[in-house]
Image (cartoon, rainbow, N blue to C red; front, side):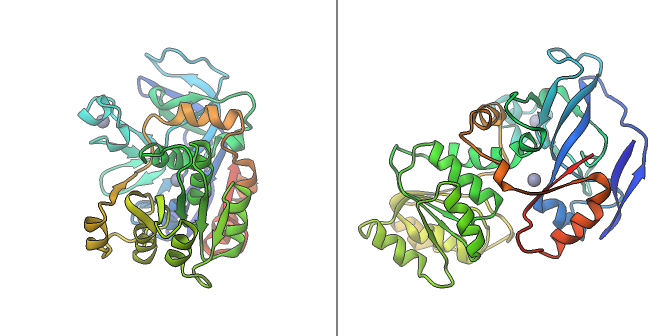
Amino acid sequence: MKALVLEEYKKLAVNEVPEPTLAPGEVLIRVRSCGICGSDVHGYDGSSGRRIPPVIMGHEASGVIAKLGGEVEGFAEGERVTFDSMISCGRCRFCRTGAPNLCDSRMVLGVSCADYTRNGAFAEYVNVPAHIVYRIPDALSFNEAAMVEPVSVAVHAVNLTPITLGDTALVVGAGMIGLLTVQALRAAGCGTIISTDLADDRLAAAKKMGADVTLNPKSTDIVKAVREMTGGAGVDISMEAVGAEATVATAIDSVRKGGSVTLIGNIAPKIGFGLQSVVTREIAVRGSCASSNDYPACLEMMGRGAMRTADLISATSPLEGGPTMFDRLYNHEPGLTKVILNP
Ligand SMILES: [Zn+2]
Ligand SMILES: [Zn+2]
């Protein structure tokens, strides 16, 4: 089969490689769409250390079941499906208590690190365990369905956040996850939603996705503006989708006393934060990582248009265009956010 192989850092090539062999419980999927994630771009240049070559990257995908491995029940060849990016063991205490994203021995598709290499979906075929496979609603294209992975990250974070109908919310960062979080907050019944980002084109996208107010910290003191808009109190909830010291501070300082801050972004491994602001104002701060069993709800919402992804896809390309697309993303081509490869 054809696959986009990371041969060495910053060197991708479309090569002929052997088709994956199926372990019991796995299905073979003929990949139709696979999105390039920011983490793939950070892996491409070696900066994350999570894509040690050689490896086939790609974990935001959809396709058609080509073959069922032994012991697989409930699926048939030819079905349109997508799958979780994370391969959980199904046996540890976290898997058994409904948190497979915290699995003790989780592997991420398309990742190659010190502990394991698991080839991903920038290829004609990929093998995945049947327990992470989900059927796609008819209304969704393969490209849209490949977006369920980032959608699930946003939906999971909103699910972890205590929300009451009409709550005011701040979303810090309007990248892919921030934009999807705006939509998920809207679906969850939030009132005024405020989106912030340094880039005005992203703020325009946030408006389209349902944000009521957009603020750029280059020209506005976010915390001050948020307080003015909320009668001096601050928003009920903040969602942080960047992961840096300044943006986490904005999320914490903009929330009201007793409010909740959910942290999704984690670019910086470590930051300082306003301890007294959190303690004396009884702010609940919690982390949110990937998703856990959120795919069925996400696909249902995507199928009826409650979470929209088509507008967030900025380009598509056959697998052969992969090296060029990675290069363009790596060089931060303006306007190029989500790229989907169609093997
Ligand atoms: Zn991803
Ligand atoms: Zn597990």
